Image (cartoon, rainbow, N blue to C red):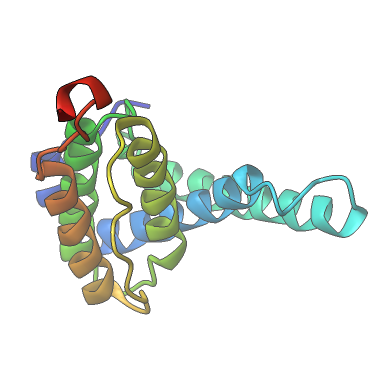
Length: 162
């Protein structure tokens, strides 16, 4: 499936954007569960939750692609601030076009990716606020985009401090 750009997201119908928010949030819910070390698939109950999350995502994706045959999904491509910002701008455009939805799991995925970048480049983690609706999601994506665009200040090396 081709990668969606911000300009393509801005051209979505509200109906298509609403359906896409659902798909993206279900995908993120599954990935967040899969990638959370505290949620091991070792127990039968956790494995069932993970499988149900995956099946819900796959069913929503099938429905979406059946209705919108040339559909594209916004996906992060690299774990660097510039690429995360591009992806977040695309997500923000999708949320702006949608009529309803709760992107809370999607924002958890965004935060998880930002946290990985923060660790790797020595940057503070992005500040988080609760996400209950589309406007909260847009606000938080704006914050992540600003975080991505802020310069990284590396601490001085010990031999340079003197």
